[in-house]
Amino acid sequence: MADQNESTPAQEQAAAQDPAAQQNAQLLALLHRLFGEAAFTDVEESYGILTATTTREQIHGIIAGLQQDEELQLNFLTTMCGIHWPEQEGRELGMVYHLHSLTRNIRLRLKIFFPIADPVAPTLTDLYSAANWMEREAFDFYGIIFPGHPNLMRILNVEDMDYHPMRKEYALEDGTREDKTDLFFGR
Amino acid sequence: MAVNDTLEGTHKIIESAREQQPHLNPLAPTVNDFNQELTTLNLGPTHPATHGIFQNILQMDGERIISGVPTIGYIHRAFEKIAERRPFYQITTLTDRMNYCSSPINNFGWHMTVEKLLGVEVPKRAQYIRVILMELARITDHLICNGILGVDTGAFTGFLYLMDEREKVYEIYEEVSGARLTTNMGRVGGMERDFSDIAIAKLRAWLKTFPGVMREFEAMFNRNRIFMDRIVDVGAISAERALNYGFTGPNLRAAGVDYDVRVMNPYSSYQDFDFEIPVGTKGDTYDRFMVRNEEIWQSLRIIEQALENLPVGPYHADAPHFYLPPKQAVYQNMEALIYHFKIVMGEIDAPVGEVYHSVEGGNGELGFYLVSDGGRTPYRLHFRRPCFIYYQAYTEMVVGQTLSDAIVTLSSMNVIAGELDA
Image 1 (spheres, each protein chain N blue to C red):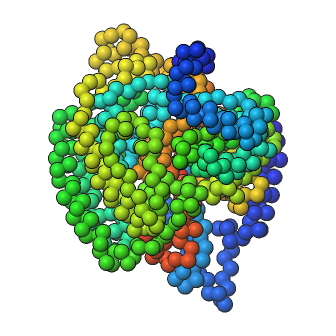
Image 2 (spheres, rainbow over the protein chains, first blue to last red):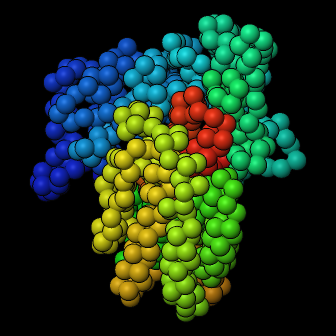
Image 3 (tube, chains in turn brown, purple):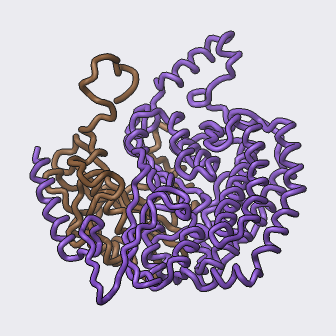
C-alpha cells in the first residue's frame, strides 16, 4: 500500500493489459485532444477512476464538451460535491465532479479549486437538471456560489442559518466545552 | 477572513433569484388571484401519502397541478459532517439510517468502499453471504414501495400480506446481525459472524413460502383494471429526461435504460450469478411498479443461486488491523488485545487516497466518495443518495396532472426521507 505511487515496469505491463487502465488512457487522450494538455493538472488514476484537476474557467466547457462527445459519451452526471482544504493557500474550496459514460462504462473525476474569499463556481444547471439540488447542497454546506443557478437557496439546513457548516473551521462539537476532554475523539 | 463579505454576496444572489422567480420562493405571500382561482396546497410535511417528512407546496388550478415547490431537509442529521469525526467502523451506523428500508445494502456498500481503500480482499463465502443479504434487502425495499403504492390507490390488503413477508425477512436479519431495521450488519473485511443453522433454515423456509404470496400479490394487482386505470401513463418521464435528472435504479430502468450497477461494475461476486435486468418502456408509474415486481423475482433467483453454491471457508478477511479479533482471544492473547485496543481507539491509520464505490441500492446507484488523508477518520465523505438526486424531477413529473396522480407518482418513486436528507 505504501508504494502505490511508484510504478515498476511489471506494474506498467500489468496496467497495459488491464482494460480499465486502457479505457482511462483512451479517456485521457480524448481529454487532451478536445481541451488541450494545459487544461489538466494533477492527472492520476485513483482506485480505477481517472482523476484530473482543472480550473473553474474551463470546467463548464469541459463538461459540456464531454456531454456532446460521441466517442466516449460521458453524459451522465453521477454526483458532485464540495470540499474544503484550509491549508491550501488560494485554493481552499473545491468542487468534485463525477461523470460516467453509461454506454462505455468509463468514469471520470474532475476537480476545481478556488479561493475561499471568492467562492464562485460555474453552474451546470444548463447542462444537467440533476445539478440543481447538488449545487444547492454545495452552497448550503460550503458556501460555494453558482451564478446563474435558478434557485440558489439552502436545501437541507434551515433558511436563516448564517454559516456553512461543512467548512473545516466549524468543529462538530462545541469548542468551548470544558467538561470533557476531546483528546481521543476528533482530529 | 471575509466570511461576512461572502455571506452578503450570497444573500444578494438569493434575493435576486427570488425576485426573478417569485413562484419558487416558498416564503413569498401567495398570490390568490380570483380570476385564475389558483389554490395553494401544502402536501406535507406530515401527510400520510408522503411516507416520510418532506413538503410540496403545490399551486392548483382546480384539480390540476400548475407548479410545485419541494422543500426537504426536515430530518437532516448532518451525516457527512458527523462522518468526518468517526472512525470507519462507526460510520456503518450512519449508513443504516439513510435508506432504512434496505439498510444491509448501505452497510455493505460502505464496507466495500473502505475495503477498496485498504486493499482488503474479502473471501468468497463472505461475498456470497453479502449478496444474499443485499438481495433480501432489495426485496424488502421493493415490497414496501409496491405495497404502499397499493395503499395509496386504496388497496390495503396487498400491503398487509407483504408486511407479513417483510417481517420474516427481518427475522433472518435478526439471526444474522441481532437487529431488524437499522442492521449495522457486517464488518470491514467481511461479516461479523457466519450464517447460523437457524438463519439458513429460516431463509430456506421463507424461500419456499414467499413466491406463493408474491404470486398472489401480483394476481391481485398486475392486471387489476381499477389499479391500472389509476397508474398507467401517470407520472411518466422519458429516458432522456430521466438521465439528465440523474435517475438510477428501478426508476431509470422503468424509463427503458438498462443501467444496473450490479451488472456494469460487478461487486461482491455479482458476476457469478445469472439474472436479468427488467426494463420498462414509458417510465410511468405502472412501469415502475412492474419493474420492481420483476426485480423481486430476479433477486429471488440470485438468492437461490447464492445459497446453492455457498462456498465453504472463512467468513471474513484476514485483516487484523481492521477486523476485531474474537472477544475470547482478546482476554487470552496479547496480540489480539493490542489489535482490539488499536481498532477501538482508532490508532490505525488508513492509506491516503480517494475512492468512489457504488452499489445498486434499493433506489439506484448508492455511491460513497471517500477522501482519506491518512487519519483515522475520513477527511471527506460524500454519499451519492439516489433519492436526493431523482426527487428533483418530481415537480416536472406531476405538473399538469391531478393531485391523486401526484400521490401515486410519489409512492412509486420510492422517496425515502432518510436517504433524501441524510
